[in-house]
Image (cartoon, rainbow, N blue to C red; front, side, top):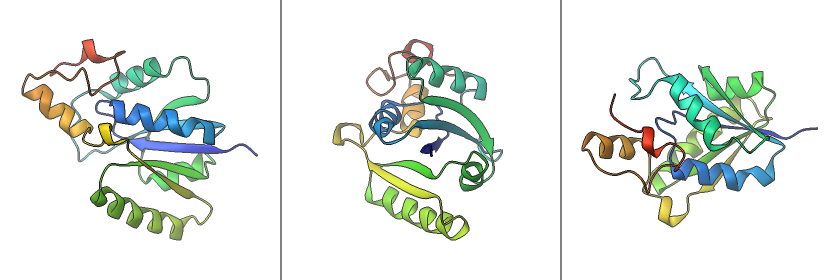
Length: 157
């Protein structure tokens, strides 16, 4: 039986931290679906199409990775895709507390879906899409925080 994992997020934009988590998770699974959650309550800086394009470019040489968008609960998306794992990156204690709560709720709904929490590397633990967007708004350089494949395209829309 194939082991499929979902790595959910907004990826607005994808960061070096996201890339690191995916690369470290690859040996654990037969395939990973990078799942871009669509939240109508949130205003994204970059279009869904652009985020999908960037993720595909970053992982173009990795056949075990696919990219999809979804709406609704991540755990429902997992169930629809027959994925038994959710991979989440943890940067801080507050991330852990939040992700632990969500993992417990997900497990109550779908006991077969396991959440795997992966600690961010110390040098990447301060990077988030939110921080990258703030740096961009302040016209700062984000070269160290995003994959080199997309850095030249990052600008405020």
